[in-house]
Image 1 (cartoon, rainbow, N blue to C red):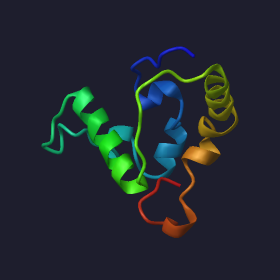
Image 2 (tube, one colour):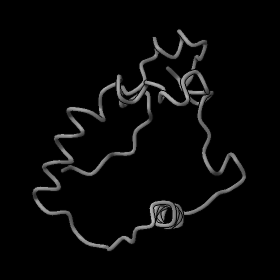
Image 3 (cartoon, rainbow, N blue to C red):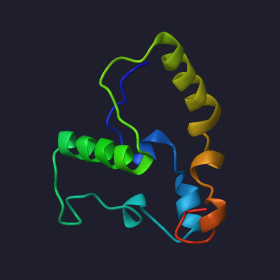
Image 4 (tube, rainbow, N blue to C red):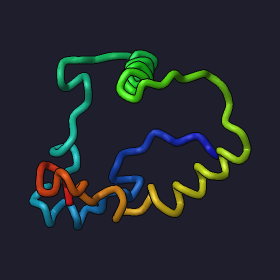
Length: 104
């Protein structure tokens, strides 16, 4: 699976300009903020470590470094195509939070 290039949300096509405009937003940057903009700059390694620690604590699991198996890579690629790259997955509000700050 190819590494992800650093591109803007607009360039990826995940959020279409027409959709943003329909919500009264001209630029996606009006709806998101970086950690640096929030006064909490950190290195990528620091952010990754915080995510691992948070998920580990929240889910009561431990993580091990390693490589994904071929079957795991195939499953990840299939899920990306069939589910996670689709606007209906990414833009819908969770049932328990409908209308509470999500963009759809």
